[in-house]
Every structure is written in structure tokens, then in C-alpha cells.
Amino acid sequence: MDREALIQEFANDFVLNIDLVSRSYCGYWLRRVATLPNGASIAWEQGESSDEVLVADEDGERFARLYRKGSSPTLPKRFFIIDSAVARSAYEIGERLWGKNWMYEADANHYDVVMQRALLGVVRYG
Image 1 (cartoon, rainbow, N blue to C red):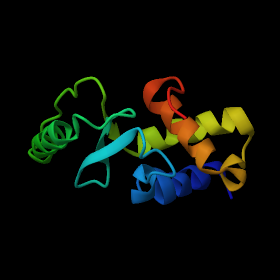
Image 2 (cartoon, helix red, strand yellow; image 1 turned 180 degrees about the vertical axis):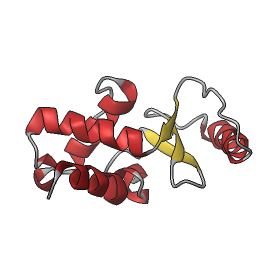
Image 3 (tube, rainbow, N blue to C red; image 1 turned 45 degrees about the vertical axis):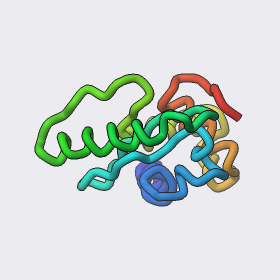
């Protein structure tokens, strides 16, 4: 499989999929707060405390409404757009760390590491 196909598979099967925010992957620190019409999501770094979840969910929906109306609001700290660009970045991080076919040998920890590095720039959790 060529590289672009691998990246697309990673995006579709993991990054843009509901599994991304399951507890066994990134869900213990990352919460999807809204889905956008193009398949992307707005996510929030909740950390290991979920005290602010209700506010984050409300904010996420408010941001999503703005995106749906054609606006591109600047998201505050701890909010992210999860899209194919993030998938590409995460895949490339994994490729640099573990080689071309890393995702076929990866487990939940690998996926968690590449997403934290792609979104946060560092591994903060886990």
C-alpha cells in the first residue's frame, strides 16, 4: 500500500472515527465535543479531570454552529479541530518514531502518543 493510502486509512479508521475518544485510546484526556459536517470534529483536552465537561460541551457546540455558518472561529486553548490534517501529522509522527508500517504493529499506546504529539506537541498523559 502506498503512503497516501496508509495515511488515508489511518485517518478514516482511527482519527476521524469514534474510537479516537474511547477510554482505551485518547478518551481519558481528549473529549469530542462536536462533529462538523465535513467529518472533522471539535475536541477538548479535558486532562484527567472532567470538572469542566458541561461548559466544554456547550462551547464545542457553539463553535460548531459558527463553523456550520461558514465562520472559522479561533478556538481557545485546549480546543482542537480534529481533521485530515491532524491525521496526516499524527501518522507522520508515528512514521518518524516507528517506521513506515508502524500502524499495523501499533497498539492503543502508539495511537495515543501520536495524537498527543500532533495536538499538544508533547506527551502529557499516560
